[in-house]
Image (cartoon, rainbow, N blue to C red):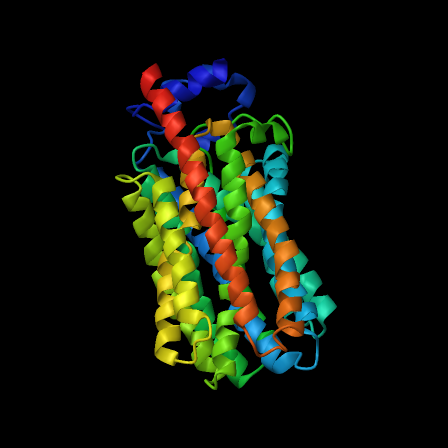
Length: 441
């Protein structure tokens, strides 16, 4: 009860304030005795420093992950031409799935060593993975370095970056989470052109080193800046399946499972599909920048729209549109103009879930459950990647003969249909919760 009282009181705009570092040594056991003038007010001051740090860390993590299309195209078209596509797919599978699943581990690390140190651990492993990947020449080495080590560190930064802003923002929470979630687009704008040009003139090894030289110092500085406004009590356990008693949590997880399948088809195979249409590799990978810009703007816009329209309603509309444009504009398409239009539209309508999901969790959860629920959602998304990406790669290799993308496009279409249906169910339960809250107030 002490924590509940503390959180209710701390959400008010408390006048005064102190050096934010004074909260670093606050004992959670005495949270209910923290004087009001030791708690910084929300939505102002140091909140924006924390937001910037989270934005940069997420830009680094998601920017590198969103550049998987560059790596995937290079692996398929240059580095491992004679290797089965389903085997190559294990590199991206490991990278994305480990980054998602490590969200659960980040909650445990947070409890043991604190927010700042946990973020520094993420920075260390992410940087180490990139550096080791730069010397890797075999698939198993890339799975270990780029996949497991970098994925683990990147996943810790990802979970922290999407969880901490809710601790600092109340009134401007949708905007704050939208800014952070759009960071992946900015990261892609930095990494994609750099990687494309470096791969063109040198080797994939130097591409990894460039990311390392950007990722390492920036993530360390941003990690040092992180701290909580309000101390968060430790979660009851590392993986709390009791959270699944909440139907909102269940359907967010279901949505995460299917959206990862649909978005992975686009992320990993669209650039390669353009190469097979006869366009050069640089053009195909540079289009990822166009995708990233549109994606970042869409994520920001979706959280702003969420102030007027319920997030679940937004998800229903955008996922229905995504399923239509996949079939109408990418399936069997041989036109560059149509393919480019598809890539822009899928960036706008197909990806805002990744910005709206943390907002839904923050709006329908108590503070101490935000990080564990996010971790649980990311775990489900990681399992989705672990199952789907190798399977999609096998379909592409066997049924598509490594050149026909129609089968995997159908998989993406089916995934977005299922996300649309899941969004409808999610809306039912969020509306029910909102109605209950209105009656209680």
